[in-house]
Amino acid sequence: MENEDITNHFEWAIMLLKHQFDKDPYSLTTDQVEVLKLHHQIELENKVEE
Image 1 (cartoon, one colour):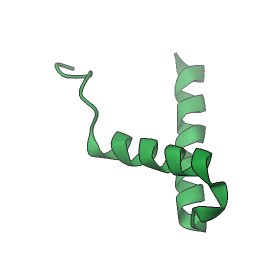
Image 2 (tube, rainbow, N blue to C red):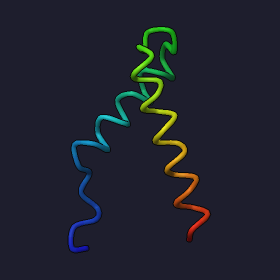
Image 3 (cartoon, rainbow, N blue to C red):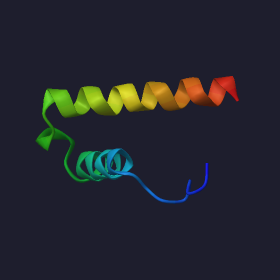
């Protein structure tokens, strides 16, 4: 891809959720926690495929 260095909106949202989780994990909703879990699972699967 041409501009892989540029962070997209989804990546910014994940970074924001990770920051919020690191700061105060009890402030996240269950939906936000599920998004972080799914993102972590996808990252693990991508590393295994490489």
